[in-house]
Length: 174
Image: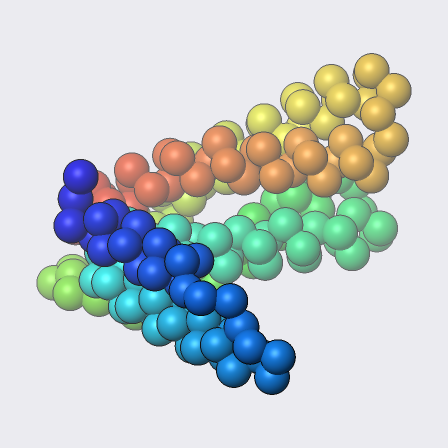
């Protein structure tokens, strides 16, 4: 078992095996403090790993993508809303990936941006195709449109994320 996992398990065991709190709750504060230290340590260790940083940055940009589509869906067709939400995601993701996930790239900004857009066009095509196909499938089995659209969009984002992770790591920010 890797050292990180062993340390995490050991830390969790310490937190949950602490003696019960007294009437004033003094021990409980100790447990919360221990948990805070454990989480901070895990985040610090994780931030040293490019995959962790990619997941955090991509997760944040994906949350923006998913949330932006809801108001857009009120004023435009679903496919257009998904497309515009994905463009918003791309702008957010480029800044995060370039500055935090892959900061050591020797490639120029123009080259990174060009390849980023190309990789994301592939990811966006996958996202849109999966979202539209699944939304139509979900609606055809009488799932409410709002739930069908939200679920289909989320699954489409996940499908596109696999392609973009591989493309950015091997092409954009190499």
